[in-house]
Length: 156
Image 1 (cartoon, helix red, strand yellow):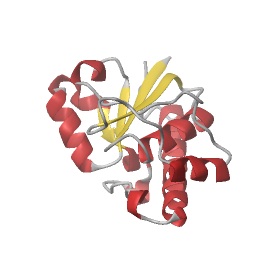
Image 2: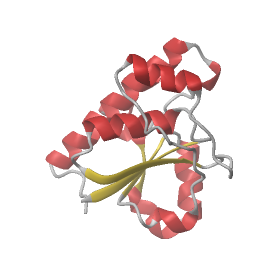
Image 3: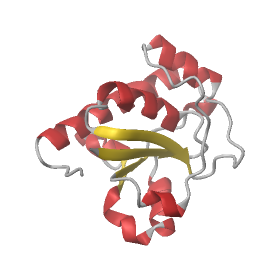
Image 4: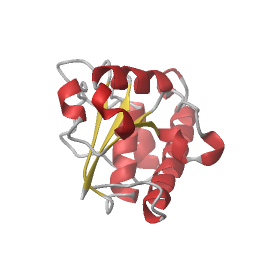
């Protein structure tokens, strides 16, 4: 089975929410689903409380011992698919691991009407901003599932 890495900036809002959602909605496609941040604290930390609350409102949850993680270039080759929340993240990841170009994609490219767009960072928004991000990620998870089912996305 394939492995998936979901990446945002600090790995405290968007990518942990994506990790929980993908585990719930696309877990049958991936043996491993993790999240990381391009600028996450090297010491690791908990998920943002507002992100955790939003996940709870939508019946998702992270593992109890979840901690943020900074993505390292050498680990990118261990994932069959790396989905980033922003175009800047895609660029940074591809610079870190030029040999992994094909595996690194923008998350919303799996939502046709949102392709090429960034998932907005809800960190400076209200609870509704977190809820809106969850809805986008849910749509992307469905898009990844559909692409895999239809053969448009090849996984290990």
